[in-house]
Image (cartoon, rainbow, N blue to C red; front, side):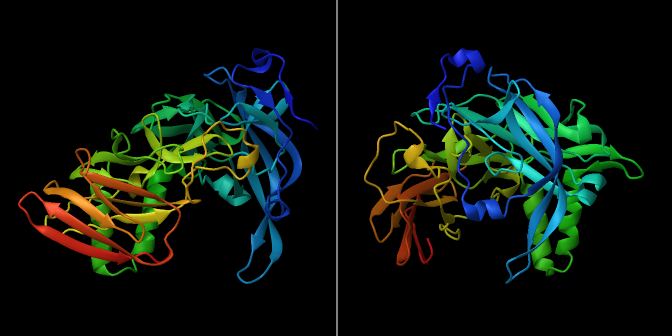
Length: 412
């Protein structure tokens, strides 16, 4: 099926700029996708506030491949799946961040989906996530078109609600406890707690359920570790905390800039993992689907550095965090190509206010950065990966003291 341009973008929906055939799924990916069994129903459908194709959630039974360690596929577990799609009339597909609409099939990995065992679905293992569809992802300044919360509370769920920015919000009634709604596009948050009522079990809160499960897992941990985990939870920002960008760094390849999210917790500022910046959000950009997912608040570092005794090392990591889709050569982007190594390595951390400058000596170069913002966060991004060598840190304080540290770069 050859690619064709739509005669009128508004004939289908304003953001659709072109249509293409369904993406070819590699055999290795197809082998682990759930295999649909029986009918597929549209459990929920809502209009797109940005004027694009409607949003819908498919529900269907499937058999999911199951693996045993050290063995190939050995069985298929029965599951009940939910899959997020876009609808144009009676056609189902997906609209990416560059305005391309492609048809999709039930069970395809081309759109967000989640499958639970039928027991989990019946017992209320509720799940929900907030996603930000992007517009103009192929250009220099993509935008968030809207924010969609989707998921499921289980077939027996009643009075389904989600907790957004610390407040419970009722979910429009849908089949099988399906969750699908548009919310304020400024909402920041990845995982959305689900609260629902179940026959014989009363009200179940997915967030509290997860916290109780973590406590049970931590009972066998040493006392010092349990104490530290408790302190970490107590210092974490509230779900309704205002998230800001604490530090920024350019992408060596010319793509979306990197940033470190910060938020105030009960005991001071907290800093998260680096991510890509789109407007005032920091997260992971999935170029394949054109979605931005915010970084979780619960994983932020809320420790308070002590001058002269603090760790300057921060966090190190790799991965492009959403720079290139797998079919980049076919993506049609106008982004200017630069001479840069594939992939990236980032180094970030939160330091004490008394630290004025930080010099990093890597096997490639020497860089001096000034901690940014109220949380005193730094961020450095290198193109490529370091497979060997040492990264040396030199921090200079306001009183003239100098602190030096180093770390091996193997694997980064």
